[in-house]
Length: 82
Image 1 (cartoon, rainbow, N blue to C red):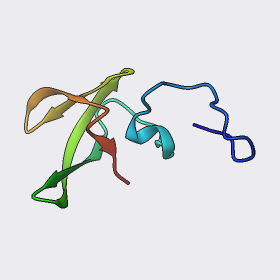
Image 2: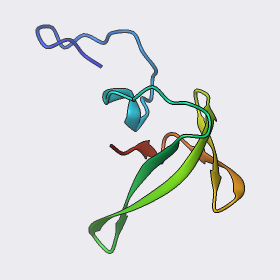
Image 3: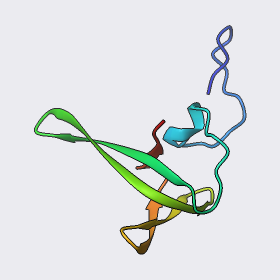
Image 4: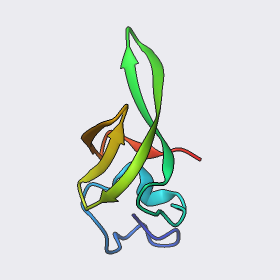
């Protein structure tokens, strides 16, 4: 991120995740959450959304239950969708 007046870099991850710039609600284990992923196909932007049961997250991944199966999704690809 840069500061508005100087354009200098401030602290933070070198490659920010999509959800670093939005308020993430308080997440509880077992809570249903919606995630979104954007992709470009034939020059057009498309999105995919998903409803999943939240388990936990770390710096890189979401840990979820999707259709009864445990899953690990990249936070660089999937962001919380309110």
